[in-house]
Length: 415
Image (cartoon, rainbow, N blue to C red; front, side, top):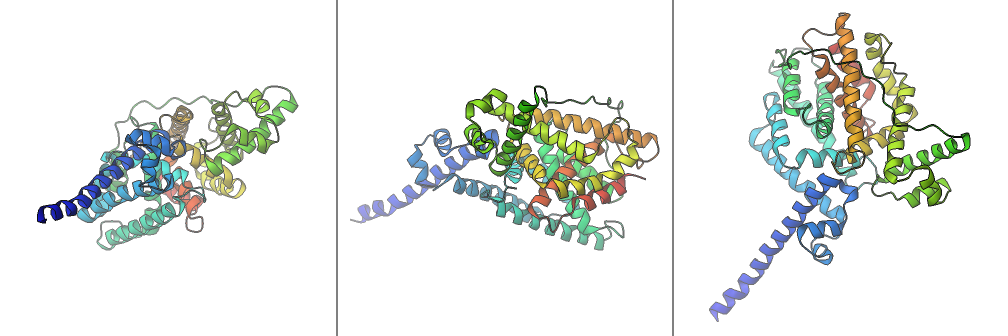
């Protein structure tokens, strides 16, 4: 009887261990798929197949894909908190934390893509990421204040502003690194920034030849008769709204056609695939934003143009906040290598870096760039900062002013 009782008691333990192993397999499979394809493109059946289970088998452990997402994020956050608790986070450890995040499989890709996708208020992770951004800003502010009190930072350092800007640039750098991994090393750039804040010589990359002035590249198609152009514009506007609200993968061609008041076949006459329509949506967003910002990279005075960027950014938030959300959602979703717009955004970041590097180089020639700064590094940081500030603003517009933060950053870089 004693042996039977022991076996009966061991059975639930064995079943519990097996359930934990199955749960872990589901989360591992889901995390890998979310990174490779993006959250919106992955179904429960995809996760079940990758985990070697049936669809009902997954549902025995998780009621929905949203619940799986929550568990995946929980696991990664738990690992990150354990590292922070073991090492602390002071200015000396920010670089190590960046390296830790970069070396944790899936961490950067998953958190970066989800942070962009979750800017939609209806996304299942929206509130979690809103609170996460607030917590990180508060933690960084406390760390900067402690460094100021200890004399590590120069007197007069704006600790709250520096905390916001570092968190934003860090988010942006992680996004750009997913598209241009060979050009953007997040730990190295974070280290250079921290050293500069402390008044130490930053380890800049070796200076090379000035990057060539970029030629403009357009993916828009405005040809054809006026009625056709008007219909294309209507389709693009309606697709933009749906992509921003639901993401690319969760929106069907039929839904876009219904919103535009046309048949699916008519839509496909103008855009042969949903991927073609996505390209047109992004191109329209970029051309609209450049027109609103009034950017003339080729002929404008570089110093004046750079100083005008903060006010241009304020106009952007006032006039077309939907464009900011559309960009944040799509650029994050497209960070997955399999996404049809991945190459587009990679080219877009390349072009943006080249443009701003040219501006900083011209400003340096005119004596307006702070000595010792590298134009290309400054271009990468500015783009990352701007993207990260837009992300924070979408989560917490009452606490983050994109224009003010850009102005404070450029005041440190220009003279």
